[in-house]
Amino acid sequence: MTDSLGANPIDATAAYPSSRQTGSPIDDFVTELREEAHELWQKGGGNALYEEGLPSQEHDRHMEVFCTKLVAEALHEMLTYNAAGLQVGTQDNESQAVDQADPRNLEQESPEPRQCQGDMRAKLKEVRKKDAPSDDDSHGQACLARAQQIQERLILANQWLIGSKPQRALVLADEVLPAHEMRTWPVPELALLKEEMQDQGKLYGNLYSETPPLQLRCVRDSFVDDATCRDVCGYCIRGMHCMFRRGGQTSLAVSSHLARRITADGADLVLDLVERVRLQIIQDFGLGWHAQGQDEPILYHSGALLTRIQAEWSHDMWEITGEEEHVYWNAHVDKANVASYDYAALLYLNTQGQHFDGGDFAFIDNTEDCIVAPRRGRLLAFTAGPENLHQVRRVTSGVRFVLAMWFTLSGKHQRSDD
Image (tube, rainbow, N blue to C red):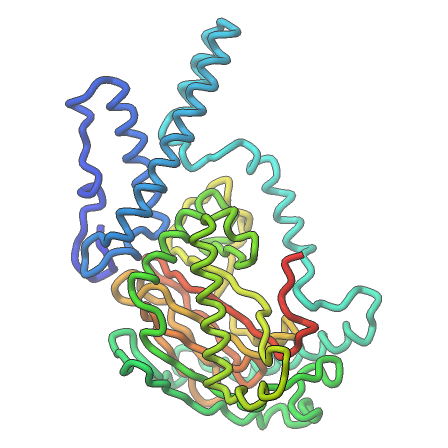
């Protein structure tokens, strides 16, 4: 096993030495449970918390909490079913208790997911996206259809000759920008869509009137220190265990309810990062002067997700895509899907080439693709309109973590947890 695909080799069991031959039967059983829990931790992306090929303090702390919790839950189930077996006095119940406590069942928190798996797939198709017009809003539906038609035209025009189109690296994974330096790139002119974008570049015409005054692509390195990134990765692994996922992609919504999954301290940490990014966008995209003399913020939270992408994952009860592969690498325009997304930002929590391979971010322009490689602590921000058609390239090995955020200029459309 390796810490990064192509990096220093790491023995995944070294951090959890076996003591099965030296303890009592119950000690050996608990050790077996802990080893199974450690394996689940590693599969969930534990190596993202490594530093220079070795477990970090954050790694050991989060792994211990993760493994202890899983072992305690397994032991609790064993005791519960054993008690039931004693009350009934049947061998069948005792056998069931052993089965339930088997380490192989640590990933199966309860039988409920199997029962509602089909329901979840159906509900996904019915989920109404943020700001989506109601079914009886004919004008809103027409504007949304227009925005998505423009997105489709851009995709068809810009994704030509896949594999031979020029690829320009804007910033590499092993390249470190100086502290407090921002690197920017202008967006290309949308000559193809001049007729469609007659309303001063507004994707939704007069339905959504806000427009960013400056269209840019920005990258900052070391926006967050390494220890904080490792900490957030640890909270992700803990919070995403036994969550429904689509293919190798698991997403955890960032809201006031986040503490239910990752503890209050973890939620506060992530929410603070989102707020720091909001303030940085105000500065980097020239919004500061708009806020002068105003009592209300000039930029509002519109949504955020902690997202993990695994190159390999178990096709188990938590998988909700069925037989179809979930294609997360489709090119898209954020604003074509959610009208109020004016700015998008990605805070990378681990590094390409150390913790995973693939997973590039690509702006899909007409004459070339412009690539930003993920690096721990790197912040990528850009305007979310059709000027920035983009995609995440497929992760080919390892586990990639990112905090994705969107912001709006409209107070009316800011994120609500209600």
